[in-house]
Length: 192
Image 1 (cartoon, rainbow, N blue to C red):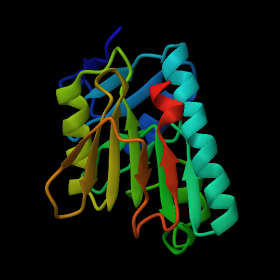
Image 2: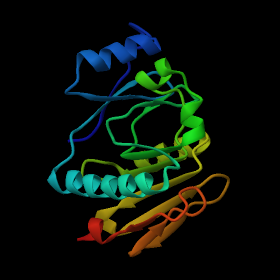
Image 3: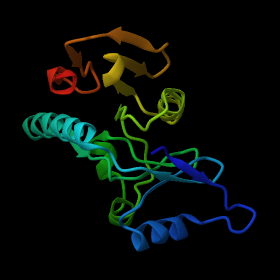
Image 4: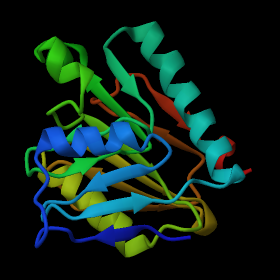
C-alpha cells in the first residue's frame, strides 16, 4: 500500500484549524499535507518497520532522558513547517529552548516549528524518491540534521543543513554529531 495524495483545492482549501479538526475526527488515518495544500494519506506500517521504529524511538528516549537537552517525538506527531506543509517524521527532536518558546496552544496542536533533527525509516510502501524529496523539504525548512534509513538497501542518507547528502552503505552506527551530542544509534536494531 502506498501513500495516496488528494487535491481538494478546487473544492476547499483547508485552514490549519480545519486540517487539525480533520485529523482529530479521523484518528485512525495518518494525514500529512504538502506545500500545495494537498492531503496525503499515509499507509500504516508493517510489523518489521513498526518494530524498528519503536526500537529507534526507545534509543532516542533513553538518550534524551539522560541528557535533558530537548524533546523527542514519535511518528504520530505532525509539525507545521515554515513552508506551510504538515509533516510527521518517524522520529523528531527539538532543542528544549526552541520548544519552550512555543505557547501552550502551539504545543497542543500541530507545533508550528521545524524539528532540529528528523529521521525517516523506509518501509516497503515508501518510494525512495518521494522520501528523499521529503528529507530535502525538511532541510529547506530549518531542520539541522536528518537521517533517511533504507533497510532493504542497508543504506543511510545523512542530510545536514547547507551540505551535500552523505550516503553510507551498511553502517553499523550513526552519530548525532553536534546536533544530538553524545547520541549513537546502533543500526543492528534496524539491519537485523
